[in-house]
Length: 245
Image (tube, rainbow, N blue to C red; front, top):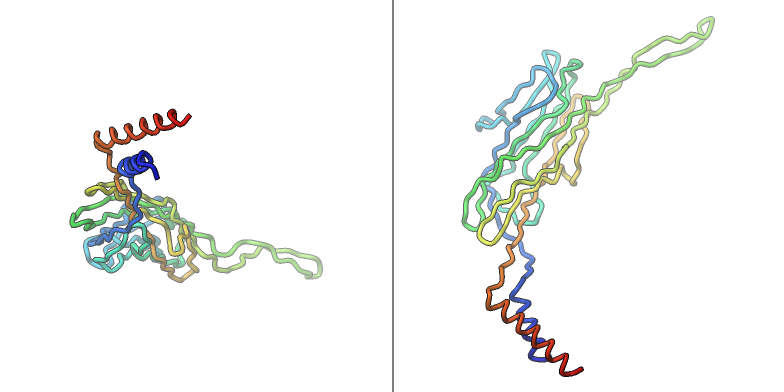
């Protein structure tokens, strides 16, 4: 390899760099609160584990109550950037409630306390919304048969229909910088990266909420001397080509 070519490669290497890496991050605390909803009757926000956060929301009346709860993962926990981890467990109780008492959506607000490269910081709050489909159980229809003459009557067929919970927005936090790295937290969805799940009537369903901490390394800006070296190498290459032509 010629001296000029070596000079060009050395200068280019100093201009930019690309590095695949995983940085360990400690998730020290997670503050989760139900902070809003649409629709519903007698909606209540509860602190089910008595830690100061309203981690549970319920709706309904004396006939029955349905609701959501978000339970943090065991903390503190060490996660690596770029890898999926469990942020917490989401649970839905689907009970038989009075018509028109169900919510149509609920909003969960999260804030995190992180330890990155020896620096402690709080990230958030950021919100994501769960859409709620309180499906009707059973339907009206007709039952027909011969009774002296052909006769039909309206009947109500009873059967249970699963309710549907949908994570309506996949969330990425605001970016924050530590040293030469830019971080952001991304909420990916339920277990299996699904955006929704189903809960049978008079049952409860739980699913993990997955997240990922993304990181980008800031590419260093070359010093003036490096730029001059790179330019000198290009000039030398041009001169060399003209001499050969």
